[in-house]
Every structure is written in structure tokens, then in C-alpha cells.
Length: 317
Image (cartoon, rainbow, N blue to C red; front, top):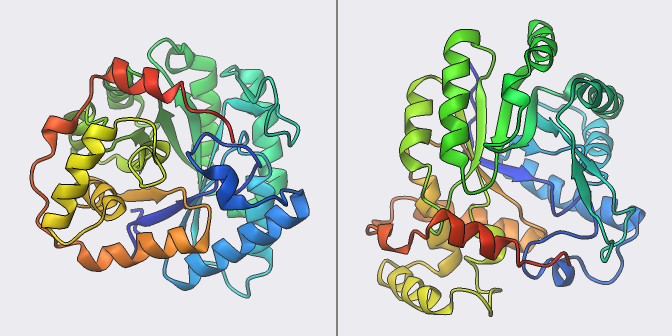
């Protein structure tokens, strides 16, 4: 049975490529975004994470050099007892350019699975523990693709955990389908989904999935920076109210955002996409306040259409 001592996981989406959609990402990384400098920076963050008890690391083929950066770091450790999850189904196309016209493309075909699995194994070797279908949406045919599922079953027989991540306004619908398929196949053991104060649409069904022995990974806890003080453009009235609520329970906005998800008992891993040691340290320190009595924040839940349409307005930076 999968078990970690620390509920915090580190995602490398913002550390493995120079451009990402998190608000303030460009300033977090600074002006030198060469591969060499970014790998050094990524390794510094990984050092801090691992020395502070973080054992789950989340990468993907589309996160630029994230697999390579993580693999190089693992090889430098005298002993590594972490758990590594990667994802297939998207291709990185930006060629290390922040202002690229196209950053990524989606492909959930069997051919692409085989290609990306070879790349992942070349990068991570035996360090890969979990392989997930990246960003499954309600219109994705992949969960009905029996040839793809058969290939994933073969991976599972060799000791690799299998999961999916979900995205888009119909996450709940996707998860419903995922659970029905898994009742028959018992293929999947992990489910990674967006859940935060602004998008609470999957709270009930994620709890249900957890009760069915699925390990739940929470992503986009800070809503790509919209639930942090770096956000000076979106949802300003809501943020004023949330800051006031946070102060009433001796928290700041970031602590409130993270702990609201962390306190959900069915969440196995709370991903942080910290770009800097300072951000990561803030996430780690707020766990000391994990018993804070956060009031109900249901009134801040947006419609999924509003949430995801605003997300599309975020710029790569």
C-alpha cells in the first residue's frame, strides 16, 4: 500500500521549463533561464524539499526538462527513498522559449504512449513509480481506448502504479467515468485533480474515489497563482474577503489556500508548484498551523465555466 510520511508533494511544472502560466513565474525564476541555470536552481529546490521530508515528486513529459532534472538530482543522492510520478499524453513544443506560439500538444494515442514511455524510462530508469495519463478531459477518448488500457495494464504488471490527471470544467464527469471503468479493470490507483477554494466542484466525487482506495493527489491548490498575493488582476473582491478570513484565524492568504486543501481528509498528496525555496519554505511552515479552524468557504466556489475560462486568460511567463 502506497504510504508517505509527508502529505506535501513537489511538482516540477514550474521548475522544468522557462515558461509556465503561474502568475509571477517569470520573476520567480529571474532573468537567467538557460537549461544549465534552471537545472541548478531546480536541484537547489529539490535539496531543500527532500531535506525537509518531502518524498513525492511530480514530473511529466511536457514539463520541459523536468524528468531529466529530477533524474540527475536523484543520481547525486547517496540514497533515495522518494516516490516519483510522471505523466504521458502531452508533448513540449516551446523549444525553451517563453513566448513560443505553441507550448504543447495533446496526444493520447497508443503510439504516443509507447514513445513517451521509452523517453521516461530513459530519463528516470527504475526511479519511476507512477505513470499517469496527462489531463484527461470529458471529451478525451483515452479511457475508452482498450488498446491503450491494455498497454497500461502491462506496465502495471511490471510494478508501475497507473493513474490519471484530470483537467477542464468537466472534471467531475471525467472522474465518474474513471471510477466506472476502474470498477471493472482495477487498473488505476491514483487520481490527480484540480481542487482549490475557487474550484470545489470535485470535492464530493474525490472523497468517493478515496473511499474506493484511489490515492488522491490535489493539484493547482493556488489556482496557478490566483489564490496568492501575486495576483493583482483577477478576483480582487474575493481575495479581499479571503485575506480577512485568513487573518481571523491567524493565517495569510497562501496559508489559507494551502491548508483548506490539506485539511481535506481524503487528499493523499497536496502538490505545491513552488518555484523558489522561499515559496516552498512558506508551504512547509504553514503545516505547523494545520489545526487551524478554517470556516466554510463554499461561497467562494466559482462555476466551473467561470473558473476555467479565467484560467485560459493566464499568460505564459
